[in-house]
Length: 70
Image (tube, rainbow, N blue to C red; front, side):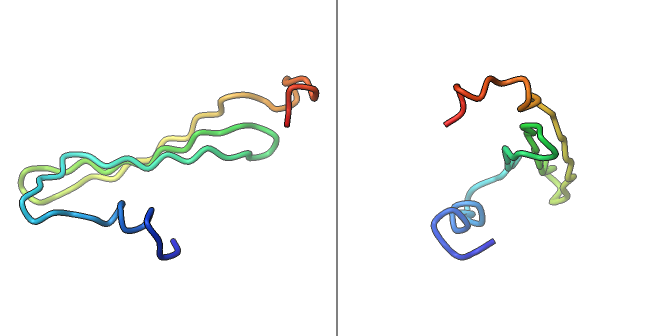
């Protein structure tokens, strides 16, 4: 990820903050479908964390009439 305000916001952690969960959501066109990818990190109170990933196909772009696409 390139340097910039978005990267700084993701990496920002205040000294007195306790992070419980982080999510990063990406919408992309993949093989003709609109896909939602969710990357999650759940933190425990013991300093450990568990990462997970979910990919959800939302719509086949062939089903959307061309006149509605910009």
